[in-house]
Structure formats: C-alpha cells, structure tokens
Length: 538
Image 1 (cartoon, rainbow, N blue to C red):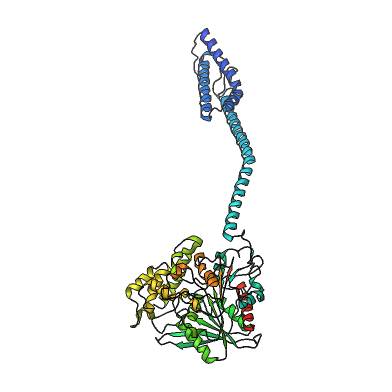
Image 2: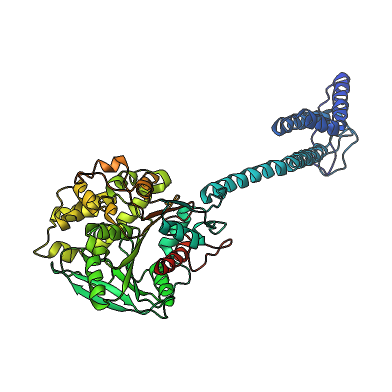
C-alpha cells in the first residue's frame, strides 16, 4: 500500500489463511497479557526467582514484536509510526507497564516477607537476648561471689594457748579476742583484696606523726637508721614504755600502716622507735656493701641498745610485721639478755620458716607464684638502686655474674641466693635455716602473741603448724624438728605463747568497716592496744 506525500512501507500480502493465523496469534497473546497480574502473583507464590520472571517477560515482548511486524504486512488498518495504534496492535509499552507493576509487586511482596520475618524475629529475639543477659549476669555474680568470698561467714578468731593464769587473764580482759572479726561486707572477706589494699594504700586517712631520725654507725661500716617518736600523752598507768617496731620487707617508718600505728601509739602514751631496714629508705645511700636480709638482726639490735642506753628506765614492747615478725622473734631467741625489760612480743603475719616457705611460693594456689614475682621485682629494683655500693666497693662480696643473675631473677629465692653472700652463707639452705626464727623462737620466754590470718595469700597454711604446735606443746612440728640439729634435748613446754588465727584479714590487712569503706584503725591495731594495756597492768 502506497500513499502520496508520505513515506510508507508496502504491505506484502500473505493470503487470507496467514492473516487469520496472525490475528489469532495476536489475540491469544493479548489474552496472555491480561493474565500478567495473575502470572506475577503465581510467580511470587511459588517463589520463582526474579531473574526467571524477567526472562519470561522478555520472551513475551519478543513474540509481540514479531506479531506486530507481521501485522504490518497483513493488516491494511495497521498504523505506522506517529499514528494512533490500530485496535489489533499490541503495545510493547503495555508489556513494559505490566513488567514495572510486576517488579513493584515483587518488591512489595519481598518487603512484606521481610516485615513478617522481622516481626517473627522481633518476637523471638527479646526472649533469646534476655536469656543471654541472665546467663551473663549469673556468670558475673558467680565470679564476684567466688573472688570476694562473700559466702564465707564471719567468726571470732581461733585462740590456741595453754591454760595459764596470764593467758586466761589476757583472753578474759581482751574481749576483742573472743568477738567476731567483721571485715567490710563487699570485699573484706577476700584475702587478696585485703592484701592489695594494704600494699597499695597501707591504711585509710593515714596521719603524719613527727619524729627524729637517728643514725647509728655499725662495725662493718654500715649505718643503721631508725625514727624515734615521743609520746603525745601520758600512759594509762604512768609508766615509761617504748614500742620497738620492725616493719615488713623493704619497709620503713614512712609507710602508711606504720604511720597509723605510731600515731595511735603516741596518743596512748607510748614512745615508738621504728627501724628503717638497711637500704629501704629512699634517697639515703648505703655506706657499706650490705643491705637488710630476711633474718639479720644487727640493725634491730643496735636500735634496742640505743633505747636501753638512752632511756634506762623504759620498758619495751617488741612488735614485728611480716618479715619484721621473723626478725624480732629471732632477735629475742638468739640471746636471753635480749629479753631484758621486754614486757611482751607481738608478731603479725610472719611465715616462721623461709626454708619451708620457698616451696610454697612456687605454687599457683592463691596466686602465690604471682605474689612471689611482684615481691622479687620490688626487691630487684631496690637492690639495683644501690648497685654502686653493693657491687662497686672494694670490700663487696658480690661479683659481676651476680649482677647478671639479678637482672634475670623472677623469684625471691633467686634474689636470696645472691643476698646470702652478704653474710657469707655457703648455700641457700644454710642461709634460710640460720635466718628463720623457727630455730630460735622456742628460747623466747616473755609473753609472745603470734597473729596470722587463714586467708593470707603469702603465708601457706602448712606454715601455721609451727605457731599452733608451739602454743600447745612448746615445740615445733616434727618436720621442722629434723632441721634443728643443734638441739640436743627436747624443748620444754612453753606457757607464754598465744596463737591467734583469724578467718579473714589477708596479709597485714585486718580492715574493719560496714559495707565498702574501711575504718582508719584495723582490728589488729585495736587488739594490740588493748592487750598491751592489760599486760602493763598485770
């Protein structure tokens, strides 16, 4: 077909039968398009993939384009480009419209499925998360209860002693010995927390007592130092009583727990003399190639001699903390003359035998191996701060190899194996045997109060058999009796020993308090003052 004045493509006749077939095909395809919405819903219902559905629509578009092309040749009423479509023309745009509707429907359906799943998850997840939260809270509470030992009950200290008039009088008059020791509720039942708090701050609201520092030259060229504090008030019975105090390892008069103890003692009418362990004070250089050791009593003996010479009328109460407890018991047991004018001796949280303790410090129970490492590290730093005096002097017994060993030391035993050379000991075993009070404590005849804590992470429970047996029979246990080869005969029963074992308190802690905050004075401080007062009156 041609027309004047317009460009057109001639129609190629294909016959009547072909024209009918094309129209039938177009009609069926048109009906197919009317089913597109149902087709899309069916695809969504059976979960047909998006890519498969898109391919099906593209095939339909391709068939429609072929039919339209054939209709151009067969249908005289077919409209060309720019004209309104004939009634038999199948619009590809219509297919595109249905495809866009399909895609929107698919996305809406997918969104509906996601929303439904989200609602299902949202109803299940809270229950699951609540369960996880409860499990986490339960785990944390379990750890807290175990670490803080919250289930442990409070109890009165265990008192072990022989039935003597003095012991009966002290126990009856010092009610604190028979009353419950109640530590702070939240952390006071943990020996680790008590020990850590003592090691970190010593005491709460520690005062600053004023004293005079004394320097005493020793025969080997060393210079012993101690601080002297005069009483701030009168004693309860008007006597002149001096407390000779020996601090713990590498400690001195400036430590918080010593300051608190001294301040309260001054207010109760006691004069206090506090030994500064040789080499422990900062900014004071050593004058000889020697520093303090586990059981060297030379400096403490020099301080006691000065007190006796300067205050000939004074009576003495000897107090030792931790390592200081070993040192004062050894000092009193070395020579009976050392007990002259001594009213009593108090030892707090000592280990009694370094030979037995060295094996326990290598164990991990109660983190004892970790404490051993930290104590050794502090000792290493202290020794290295004096390496010029200890390793550089001509009279030094140390060698260069000892300095190399010191740098690599990770335990107290390794450091003691170097420090034993200060006193010429041939072996570490010999050093521990001669430096431990277990070999001398049976010679102490003055009233002797030994205080320890069951949850002390530094003193193993096996070491507590020494004071327990000493308080009952006056002898040490059979294990230690084998090491006392210098004893020719059995030891007579001792009636002057009182062993007090608390359930809680840690190492030199013994804090008291209601819930969280401890009191400035500890159970140990209060107990000591009451007992010393009763002893002076007896």
